[in-house]
Image 1 (cartoon, rainbow, N blue to C red):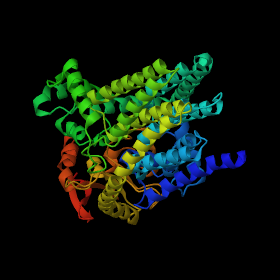
Image 2 (spheres, rainbow, N blue to C red):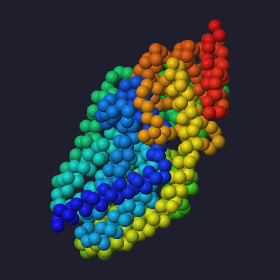
Image 3 (tube, helix red, strand yellow):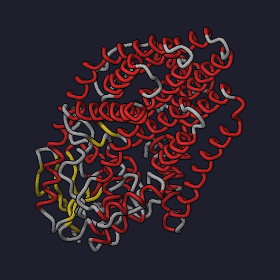
Image 4 (spheres, rainbow, N blue to C red):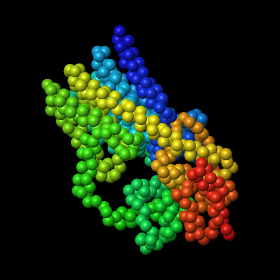
Amino acid sequence: MKKAHQGMNFIVPALLTLGVFVIVSCFGDFYFDLNDDVLMKDILSGAYTGIPAGHNIQMLYPISALIALIYRVFRGLDVYGIFLCALQFLCVYIVSERAFSAFEDKISKVITGLCIFLFMLGTIGSHFAFVQYTFTVGFMSATAAFLIMTHEGDGKRDHVLAVVLITLAYLIRSEMLLLTLPIVGVAIFARWLMQKDLFKKYLKLFVFIVAGIAVSMLLHKIGYSSSEWKEFNNLFDARTELYDFQYIPDYAENKEFFDSIGLSEAEQQLLVNYNYGIDDEINADTLWAVAAYASGQKTDETPFMENLKASTVSYLYRLRHITYQKSYEYPMTDAPWNIIALVLYLTALVIYCLAPDKKLCGMFSVLLLFACRTTLWLYIIMRGRDPIRITHPLYLMEIFVLLGMILMESKNNKRYAYIPLVAVSIISLTFIPNQIGVIKDEMAERDVMRAHYDALYDYFAQHKDSFYFCDVYTSVKATDEGERTFSEKMFDRVDNSLANHDLMGGWASKSPLYYDKISAFGFASMHDAILSDGVYVITKESSGIDWLSDYYLDKGVETELEKIDTVADVFYVYKVTSAD
């Protein structure tokens, strides 16, 4: 009988996970959500340099090296896509299994299983279809926190799994893991408050998490210890500061500054259109200098207290604002995440008010969690870094910790869990039609986008003997008429062979990988390659091409630009030749 019971605790969560996968897949293909994931996939698979590369720049070295190694064995598979999807659905299974096995009676199991299933579809829904490594990391961290909150007995197995999930998440996207780590800390602290006699166990858990992160960072530093990668990492940091947090000053208004750092108007234009990869003289020092100057020139910098006040107003609005999603990301809405979080906060407080022996510890833990989430939210809002790939994982963190608190206290009275579980089920069920509509609409929009880029990639494949450099913003968006930004379908048109095209800038530009790529085609620099036979430049109409001839003229080279082809009515193919 016991074996049958344990079997159900495995089978039912597995079926729930399979059900989520099947239902989501019925509404279209799985997508890499953003172009960052696509380039990471190309680097790992060998499509970028011809050989699967362990240095994919965005992830820490140990995990990217492992994925690249798997690609070497299975060159025809979309290993990175499988990896991200597998992690997400593994998290679904772990949470389902833990929540389902928290109760012994069938009624409680049914309510819990249904709650998790509906939550996955009605709340997380679209993130399963449009997969992004930042959200995946948040999901893993939230799952680890749930394990910490709900473990039974000595919790050794759960703690090991939590450490593995957190360490792996750190390897995949360190910044996101570190953002969610304070809430993991709240989960550890809350469990210790409930079991103060097990201080050493929770201290050991904390130490192992820190050790996992420290070892990961050490291995990453070793992997990027060469002088070439150190030089590029400095450039990468400068690029991030300039493009993510500063701006490119106008040339005419700041000519004296640009002259002082030896940057001409034509070269400044390369920074504006992000195509600075063509100019070998633009380096980390250049980008740092422009970023520092731009920071000093800001006249609209909001004072800290004023920024905090405005961010607090925005935070409170988002906390209470309720509306259905109109589209996948913009305009942003926090429902049903904020509704579910609010319900769980209120019910957790009520439950611990009624708890006979953990009243103060429980209420303090709930309030500490809310204070922690408030601090994190104000931090991201004040920095202007609050897309759904960051905010939704933060919601997921607190929801799983609160759910864990409620499930733990329900062991004393299982009815404590009924109201919040049923409430979350109803809220999630209400939003399932909205999620389905969002996924369908987004799929349709992305199909329009893919029609353009599929045609461009087919063009590249039909001209294997040629090489193409693509304007960066052309690679991001094919038209300026509201079309979705570039992304790729997972598991579709998989081609991990060396691609005969590259961007003229972006976050991988000037990296050792970039030089390996152009070297594979016999080039030493983009500047010289563009003037070579069989090399072409791709732009869209709004990006223009005059900036390119202006750049070469600034370098003392007169050029002739000839449009030789048009692809999908939006991409222009140019041949650049020297007039000398």
